[in-house]
Length: 255
Length: 282
Image 1 (cartoon, chains in turn purple, red):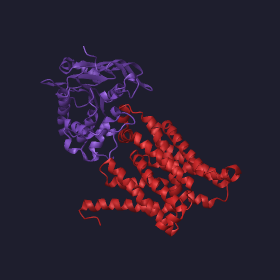
Image 2 (spheres, chains in turn brown, blue):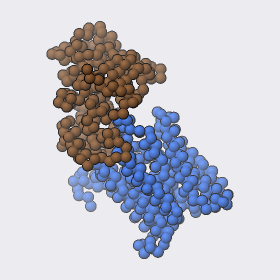
Image 3 (cartoon, one colour):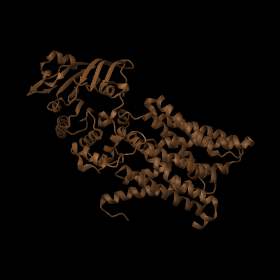
Image 4 (tube, rainbow over the protein chains, first blue to last red):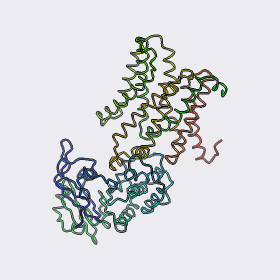
């Protein structure tokens, strides 16, 4: 069996006094499309930050492509798209092409300039998210959904094996959410990119994903999406912390 | 004017330094403004004042230091100030902006003490506060040239990293950039530019040459490249018109440069409004 892309082994994390994550075991294989779902404050973003190496776990071990996270140098293999609302600087004077190009920064390395054919790579990355014609537009002029596509193109330009997204549809209007997930699905199937995302839109995402992880400080369920249907209402309630509604219509899971 | 430049060395020094500063201050300024660090430039200029005043006092009281160029201590103070600001920003994680008034008042406080300790350098001090056309020496020009070389080297090495860091700090960290070190270097280079620009524009107005051309450029730029291009054009325009009018009207160049920058800023704001209304800009 191939080495899993991401392996978390008994990860715990503590913010000063509060325990944010306890005993997380999670394995993400190549080609997975995993949605990490859970209520507010369940530690979803913390978990992503630990995977990305932005936070150091209090306990446990993380392997990225088989290497311990602190020895893992090929950061360009892991594309990251953060929550739009609290990340980039709106009003920043930059074109879409300039933003996408900046995704190559780590791959090119310090003291080197962008290669001559960088515009070609930018165009390809924008094409794969359906934003080719926006290359010369100012990033601030785009809608939330369009901006998120640009940020995905920025992550894709370094040809990552895995794309990690933190609530990518926050600030995206509902009618565009569905097409956004269809695009992710396309990247997963056609471009063979493993996708890990944290989300609230269980309904919208459920058609695209292959795996689900239910998180509330610890992982209550991890497996194939269809197997989630076997979770009893009690299990769901124990995970979510309050009563939830589970609607099953043709393998769609709604929480 | 051209004749006078060929005739007088002091004018050559002032114009040469002015033209160099007109490029490097707005160039670095683009990054300072988009990273929302404009006020830090102000704080550092006040720290530079403490260094300058301290140096003037020392050269008055210790005869061996009589010929010491005050810029050296000014630069030292500014760079030290930039390092302290970083320390304080980390200490007050949730109130990062608190570092600015702390450092600013420290600079002004020390400056005030040195100024009152030493007497009789009011004319010198005036030129440091508001800039001067006549007081720029060959040595000052040389310091400006060295600072310019450092800025150009720094930006050509770290341009793409600084872009990422300015646009999206979290993304920069997630992609494994040495964000902390690049930022620290950035602060030190900023401190150098502030100390170097001070001879022409003056301590009190130095941050304006860093922020005003950028503020104007941002109104009309779609891309980062354009923002840099227009910032430099506006910076140069302000320096050339400002220095020339300061020379002819016998005014402090800090004042004239800032007023020209403000006029450019107003014109860009108005031109954008005119264009929006569909009335051609005159």
